[in-house]
Amino acid sequence: MARERLYLFDTTLRDGAQTQGVDFSVHDKQRIAAELDVLGLDYIEGGWPGANPTDTAFFGEPPKLKNAMFTAFGMTRRPGRSAANDPGLSALFNADVGAMCLVGKTWDYQVDVALEIPREENVEIIADSIAEIARREREPLFDAEHFFDGFKANPAYALDCVRAAAENGARWLVLCDTNGGTLPHEVDEIVRTVAQEIPGDRLGIHAHNDTENAVANSLAAIRAGVRQVQGTLNGLGERCGNANMISLIPTLMLKPDFAEQYETGIDPDLLPKLKAVSHSLDEILNRPPNRHQPYVGDNAFAHKGGLHASAVAKDPSTYEHVPPESIGNQRKILVSNQAGRSNILQRLEDIGMDIAPDHPKVGRLLEEVKEAETQGLTYDGAEASFELMVQRVLGTLPKYFETQSYRVMVERRHNAKGELVTAAEATVKIAVDGEVLMSVGEGNGPVNALDEAMRKDLGKYSSYIEDLQLVDYKVRILNTEGTEAVTRVLVESTDNSGARWFTVGVSPNIVDASYQALYDSLVYKLRRDDAPPQA
Image 1 (tube, one colour):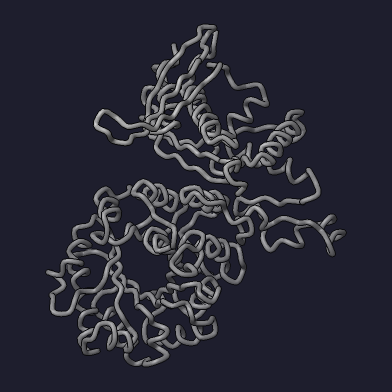
Image 2 (cartoon, helix red, strand yellow):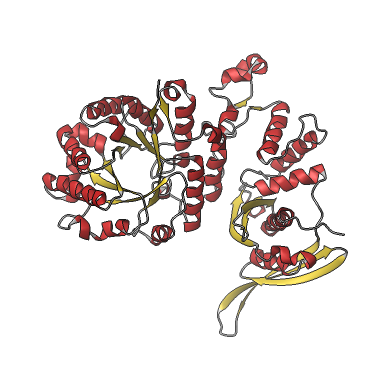
């Protein structure tokens, strides 16, 4: 029996940006879009071109997607304007996208109070705006704002609105639970009613999480007829967030009630990347991952025993609803080293290192990781540092240079113009083939100065690092013991090949943590480019 196709529409780059404390840069958006595209989502909504400088710049240099359709978001035309001449729609029409998603009001109360226009005019606005997108040969989508509240208040009018979009070429009519207050049984009932008027293969669901039901509402809507589901990575979004795509994807692909009836565009072989994608977003946001997040959290498959100790000891899988490896996670038996060994072996396999489970150094690697974790260092999101640590323990990492010492000074003073300025200077002594090279670097901060000094003269290795660039630097405080707090630094690097790698350092001293991350970045670059070891 053929399975029905479900389409996944990700709104992280727009809805996720509504989250308090989240401020994506253009570079952040490019990275997230690339992660989503590799995963295999059908649509990636990039934001609202023309609404702010970041989105405008992002759409000015759109990501090169291989799988997903890049989508722009905007509003229906303004009252009194034609769709062809509306300034807001013009920015969308000028964007290099395959699809456009317009939001319009479908709750009569909102039309009366917020728009203050006749209800019939709002229906015309929806129809004209969608028709103009279709005329320009882009795929039109209509986000029916406040649809569920509107349907409860005036079902005939809410249906008139979505029908107007459908009749004028909208590929998808997305039913939005905008304030997140609708419950699953209500979603089921309303969607089934709508599906009698409009085919389910043109209906979508956009759920907010204000009652902790966004994922449940999305699943209920699918069973009731919709065939497109919208969500965000890690459930980002304003207020309480949106439907969590990281929970929706494995539920749709691993749970028999859905997997046997529906299929998505995601390659099942890529499902184990889900945890990495989730944690990658957290690294971009410079926040710790939720250890208890369903499916991908570090503790999602952690077993401590307690009341079920004997049963867990005999077969921990009976307390797991899916195999943890299926979504890139691992089982943790909190009082046993066995899970630790399996985790290490899995990580080694992920980076392409095939090591026998009984290799004598596996135990040492486990000790190294545990010791690092006690100091606050985690290799999640810092694969380059993890690879280097493994090779150091195995004795396979070439020795390139040694840092004999470094010193960083920060001076705050008045310059010749009487302006208060802060300057930093770093001095580094590096030994290459027995020769000591001393370099001085200046920068607008201590880390910038240290980076300049370290890369100023690496002797015979200088030519290897000419194209090395640091593209991101993030600091996280791991505890809150005042000025003695432990600091974690994550550095992102790239070169002319386009490759990117992440390195990490941890120390109570922010400069020393930065040095560790910078050092690993240099060593990883040299190893990656097959630089010769020291004589």
